Image (cartoon, rainbow, N blue to C red; front, side, top):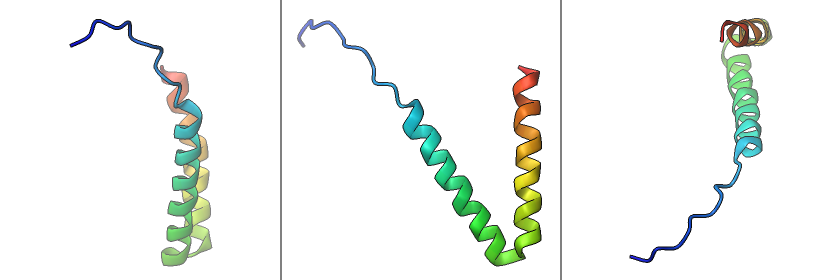
Amino acid sequence: MQNRPTGIAPDYTLPALVSLGVNLFLWLAVIWAVAGFGAALLVGALVSVFIPRRKQRR
């Protein structure tokens, strides 16, 4: 094994957030197709409300 210095790890924050957005969109589309627009709207509103509350608890 060689004793090379380790480099800086790449920052994958932006790709992770883009993937999260795409997945959220697809899940809402599936909910819309299965249960209707109202259910997808309700789930989106609940996510919109609970994400800031979770962030405030930390």
